[in-house]
Length: 461
Ligand code: PMP
Image (cartoon, rainbow, N blue to C red; front, side, top):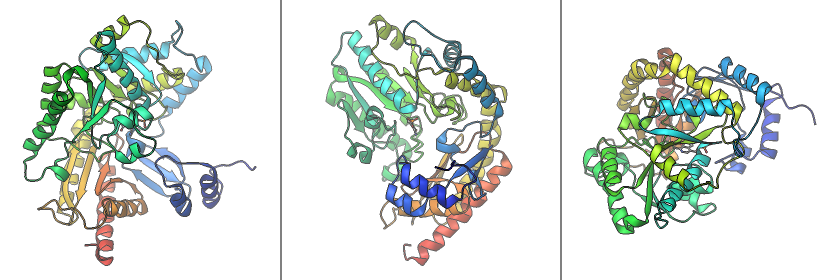
């Protein structure tokens, strides 16, 4: 076979892709008909495709490229680490400097007594670790019956059997099943489900479902509650202000463990190092991945409190670990990424420059006839598309049809903006500059206009 390179014609690359590469979360036959867009380069917030188009990445890849694409420092650190020690494990009385240094740095950055790190290769793996950790914690405390984990409908915690089961997305459960001992309560999505309540009333109501569930199951059966500070893949659902304080009260009252899944919200996304700080959450365990290495290497992990660590340690060996737990190259790259975030003041840039600038323009999109609400925390936002803003109505077409059509217009206009149902979402690299925000907004508005015109033309409005 000939060498496959960036210089091959796009159609040939697409044909090979369709023939041999099975994509995640993709209808393979549908994709084969359309052909994948082949991304060849990235720099800052910009991607280039095989046809030479310049695309602005409003999603930071999959919410992960926090420092932007193409930073040579990370490539240099990876090369240096590969030459020095490409791989070693941390299983059998061995360790290495990159894992030690990264764990120590994370303990310094994480709030409260979150001082211990168990490394994984991804967010899904880290959440699988968390299932074991919380169940083991109660076993060692001689309460093995406490093993149920309460999660939320439309939450997302990954795509392994454990992560997919913690997530509350029924299409994922439908493909392969769901592990036992995980139950779901309602999500704090006021726009779609809040009815006539105020957002604050609704936030309290949804949080109190946790208390009801604990009482229904019996506190002696419940190990933990898991939630994303802001649901990401569920559509950037920013909870009402009353939600997290009430969850925290309930978790404290019943003494169950709290896992904050910070895979998206960690490492500056919400304008603090962690979303837990933005929302005043005090978790026992935080799941991390994505922005930990800005996506330059696959790495995830669990940051664990003194209390949980000490109890699990008391129990002796934990029968759990991954070949790539604390992979030295991934750890070295993550450490360099954290240095850049810290030394370049990227979180201050989010708080003081990018967020305020984007917020004004994002909110202004609500003057568009399709846009009902615009929400943004840090650099994580969504707009709800609706045929009637006053009633927060849904479209007559199947849910997601309008969102998908809008995403197609964004794609055609060289803007990566995702849709979840009929919400459009963004999470650009944290280094985005005001002039790039202007381009993002101009393209978003154009795409909304084209989507609106198309819906009218097709009689869908
Ligand atoms: N948790 C959350 C909150 C996520 O958003 C994701 C990924 N989108 C995951 C877990 C799973 O991470 P990964 O895809 O790295 O397994």
